[in-house]
Length: 276
Image (tube, rainbow, N blue to C red; front, side, top):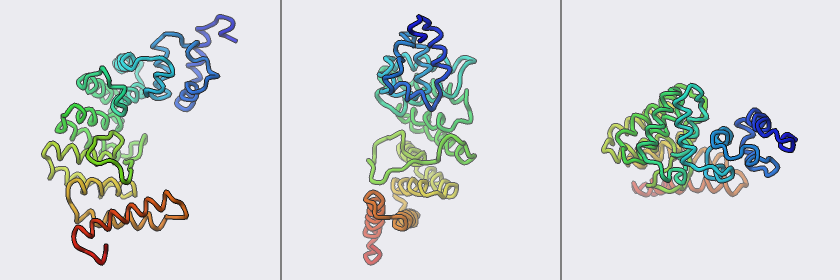
């Protein structure tokens, strides 16, 4: 009705006032919302909605916004008194999605994440993404303290995210921003020639985080380090927990089977044939 009445400014005001982290993505995906018409070609207002929906190639294409423009606006907002954590999340998205980074230098990405970390010092995800950005720039040595700070923020109970994510049977050797922090720390440490330091980091991580997902991540880290002794205990625990929970479900049984194969191969490596 507001659009029909020619009250575009009021329609835009109401739309952005109504939008939040939960419904912004739905607005962008739903053809029933006249998003493009309401926001017009104003990049600042488009950014206001996109940063709530989550910056991604898909959302930017949906609204017709250039990634470089989003990056510039997010940096500008972070330098202003009007900044909020949505701006930090927007910058972090340029680490997790390679398509967004086209035309943005590694130095600019690192500088933007440093500004985000200073603006929101308790936000572990931003610190982690800063470590990721250093790795992407080939600066593995500089990534290590960032990953350690990110893990420390999890130890302090930062509320915004869980300590780890995990995938069994995933690609090995390739950097993935979605891998567990301890795995990324291990990879960066090995590339920087800091194996002994990283081994201590992994040992401490195992003591600090005893949940199942962290056990899976720790096992991957020990495997990268070639530390089979602690790996035995973790692989056995992972297999037993998955086997105990396996039901008549192909996916759950598949995970238990994968864990059994990983444990069996480790036994075979050490010629423990009966246990294998």
